[in-house]
Length: 375
Image 1 (cartoon, helix red, strand yellow):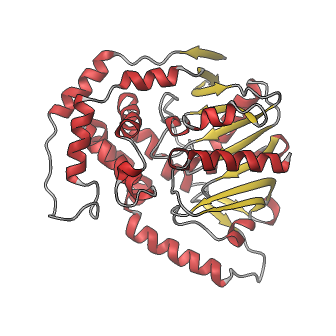
Image 2 (tube, rainbow, N blue to C red):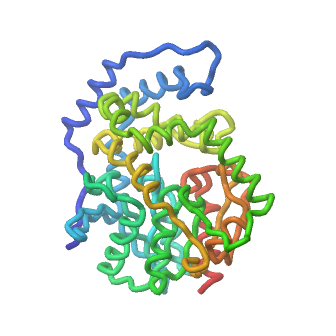
């Protein structure tokens, strides 16, 4: 069953948010430390002031409601998604999946670029991952990217799309990869701007990784040693973390914004990439839906079922890779080709983890180029 909806958050929830912001108890910080130890205190105070006095969630709602918002009930689970038909003579069905710490809002700027071109348009389906945004929180074990891929395929079939393309970054790359592995006869092509963190290429007997691959694996380990504290916590004890983040809007905001700053190509100042309205729309969505715990526990659920890809499970679906310069750590092509049938590869000299927001034009152009190449 699919039902069209209008997003309209009760005013009492927004009033409660402002009350919580007024009661923030600020911490101290080491002088001159910038973002070295986490979200910078001065910036967080500026962002808090904007959130309290200037940010308007109703504007965000208005933007969301410009498009078709729906709730689909699939296998008794409720999935929120946007569905926007392309304006071209022939449009390619494409399901785009976001990741953490963003939401379906990450993809909003892509919509006009991918649907309004009369020569190269797409029918876009942009779901909220389970436990994110307005999709259902699943409290039983097993809600991982493979589980979501099964729901996504049933959703696309329900919408009348027997064959379709998939695109994703962050966890969305895991969902997209799982779709290609599980339903190859239905997938036209897979376009990724990130390689799933649980991707494990299986070597043949007596085969070894190249020096380039081993150097990458060493770099990945060093990166996680320096930057991966968030991942270890979310992977092992997400509930303990969630008590604080679910109760403090500034705590929640700092946890998310620190990653937006650290993973984007912002050259030291987050305002170079994101407006405060963009940052706060995403954080406010997490706050009003109380989805921080249901989102971060995906880390542990995914690690229980790594995406092991070898000779017998190689993805033969045509694959396009968009590598933005500051997306780290990113495997070398040879490492990815052990699992994927790469037909298109683009190296971008800038951009980071959130290209749908940072480099919208470039990502949209690459998606169009890839699907035109394989069709």
